[in-house]
Image (tube, rainbow, N blue to C red; front, top):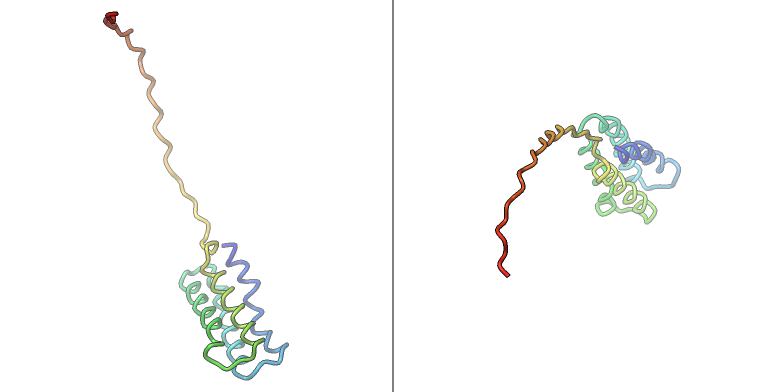
Length: 125
């Protein structure tokens, strides 16, 4: 749950990066589209596991998009860092919701009666 809350803070940055930096048309379109979809899916991922998986797939798409489109080094770095961190934050080890386990208490032990002293045979020397 902590990771998904951090993802909510981090995910909305992607659509604004191409507007601030000089990105090519392919990277700009990819970042705007994937960032908008990821922003919506991030909100739904708090209540729906399918939206969480879809958000992780969008992060994987953004991480692998530099290998499909021709991009500059800055565009590749932004896409890979954003995509990998989105994927890890949504499907990583801290992304599961909190669980409460309730178990029944063990039955109290019954007190044992004191047994009679045992009689031993004398040991021959």
